[in-house]
Amino acid sequence: MKIKVNDNEYNVEIENEKIVVNNHEINLKIDQDKINLDNKIFYLDFVEEGEPSLMIINGSAYVISKKFSFQELNKEIRSPINGKVTDLLVHVDEAVKKDQTILVIEAMKMENQIKSHLNGVIKKISVVKNQLVKKGDVIITFH
Amino acid sequence: MRILIANRGEIAIRIAKTCKKLGLIPCGIFSDGDKESLHRKYCDEVINIGGYMANESYLCIDKIIDAAKKLGCEMIHPGYGFLSENEHLVKRCNKEGIVFIGPSYVAMKLSGDKVKTREIASKVARTVEGEEVENEENALKVAERIEYPVILKAAEGGGGRGLRIARSSDELINLYQISKNEAQISFGSNRIYIEKYLENPRHIEVQILSDKENIIHLGERECSIQRRYQKLIEETPAPNLPDEIRQDITFTATKIIKEIGYENAGTVEFLFKDQKFYFMELNARIQVEHPITEEVTGIDIVEQQIKIANGEGLNIDQTDIHIKGNAIECRINAENPLSFSPYPGKVEKFILPQQEGIRIDTAVMGGYSIPLFYDSLIAKLICFGPNRNTAISRMKNALQSFRIIGIPSTIPFHLSAMNDKRFLEGAYNTSFIDQMKYFSPKEGEIAAAIFAMIPRKITFLKNLYQTDPWFQKTNDLDHLSNYQDNWRWYS
Image (tube, rainbow over all chains, first blue to last red):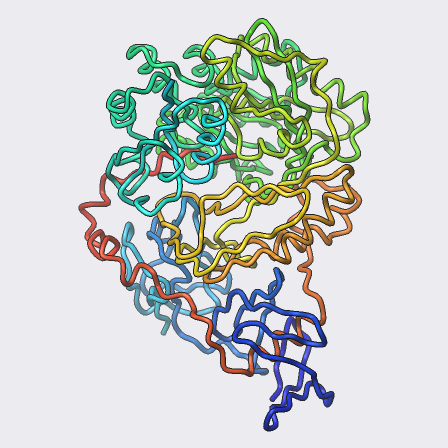
């Protein structure tokens, strides 16, 4: 299977007990969230599943993608965090551009600008100002 | 003697440790949102002050005074953030006969007014051109004279909040009213002043201790690595700073403190560009980044704060201060390391690096849920050594072996910074983050590719607030309608 890590491509195959990366057999021991790769230990401390996923391994961040011709067809915007909607900058039927700020969610004293990932027209706004939102809640739907 | 620590988290623990060292009894407060917080355990006695949001707990002067009385405390240490620079708390302490560990009421009131402090400081230090403006017309006139770009600031604001940059008269017209409204909401005052905006300066500050008779400095700190005016990495001494400038900036800071008539620990912040430094503001509190100064000077700043406040005065003078080696602090925040969006949640495991030349100030432990209501700072990782290179290599090592499982943190950001050529050469300014490349070793990429393919047992973030009864309850807006964020951001 092809996997993209930080823009570099890796071909990973698991055959029985063997792991083959880019046609090289890898010597490794797996212990839960820790792998021993050629005598160096890698700890997986954090994963956020998604497309792409984010991993933190030994203090570094890795962005992992399994899909290649990745196209943003998603017609929704979901809240990336738990927080409070402090500002709504768009209205229904408004045409917005990619990267335009749609709303502001505040959490832990920080304002987070939520931007559109596409050019589109807003069909539905599922939140009101001052509402608390949870991570993953749908906040905007596009036509 | 009993001291009330009117704060939470790591700084409450840090203050409690010095109290114990001095044979004083640390007492504490905690909100309903902090029932699990570790700072409770470091205080000999604690009182629950209720509330979740800061303005229903740690920002309530009445609750704090009440707690001090109930616990029989003779002194209050405010820590940083919250009420640490609030002159009304100082006034109230004076009235109640409680010693406030910090500056006097007059000095506190003055340092909160940026326009007045600037005016006083300008007698002895260079300041960036600028002035307070009363209306839009006035603002345009001032901007025209000092030339664009200009920066709009709240006269009674602080900590990097509500700063706006205007590069043209159109932008200024657009931003003037926004800044005014924002200042009113955040700081309860709509006074605005305009300054010439310096592009990409360095941010250098000087740590001061003053008992009025004796004013000494503990050297400077380089704090240029910031995001949205919030510091992320600090170091001391400032790299690539000519000796004569170092002497000049530290001496100037003591002169400013003298002019203001300030006592206790304080920090004078400067912008530095083209070999010239400009006074920016005075921070009338202990700062988040004070440990790096403690590590290179061996001075316990909290101990000196207490001694100054209780009238003993400073028992050290400038000749006792010798800067030894280098120290760096990385602020580890509970945030997505790429987007910096906050990420409150449960820390499954929290395993500290064990090595030479390290200090970690934290209130987090494995199993602890980081509350949504307060700051995202979860640990201050301080590394020091006989020289800068040793401090950096210790920091790299510590960042790689610090295991925080369950939530993401800014560790990858810090590790990238420690591998950035500009940081290694000590040649950076406030634009550092804009051009930073993320550091991730190739071998780690292979490990990531394998992790992506194998089944894992790691427990991923359970959405804390989906199961938290409080969060469910407060989804009704009535409870939140009285919530107004009047935090002062730390800096």
